[in-house]
Image (cartoon, rainbow, N blue to C red; front, side, top):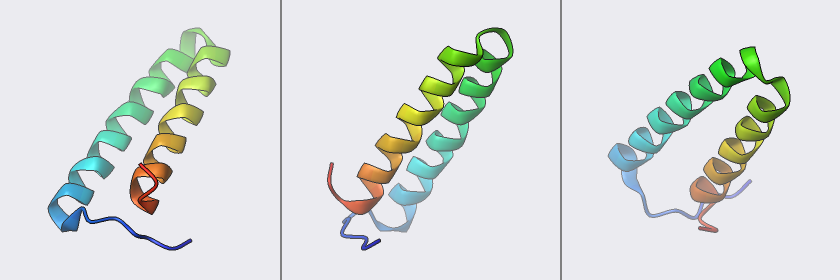
Length: 56
């Protein structure tokens, strides 16, 4: 996977921290509603990959 982003270390670190927080929220939602939690996790990971690869 080629990384073509212009984020820099600080912004990439901030995006990664946001990814962790969003995945934690998805896991908490998954305790009560597994389907919705898994869908949130898939969306969060997809958005993160698009940001890191520079497609978004």
